[in-house]
Length: 91
Image (cartoon, rainbow, N blue to C red; front, side):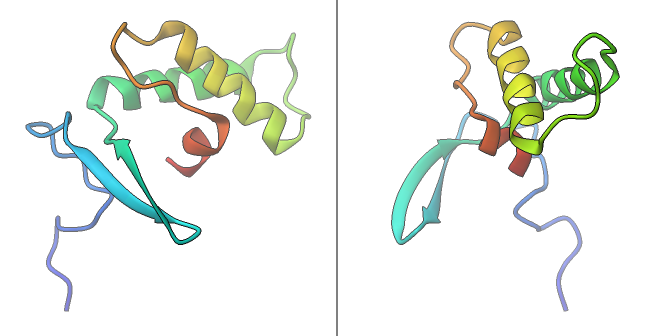
């Protein structure tokens, strides 16, 4: 039986600068965990892109997440990790 609050997707506000190693295609990749501020910025980007009538809501998934990632990278604080569309979609 799994304990509550111990999943790999939980946000740990006291430990947001720790590197996380993930295995992608048999290769270990070190990535920064998402901070609470980065999560909020990602949500803002998602809302901005999904409700923007100029951009439209009828677009392919890769195009949509590309716009969200671009919004995130333009508005993130200096020193934050650059995020890619696939990373944003997976979050």
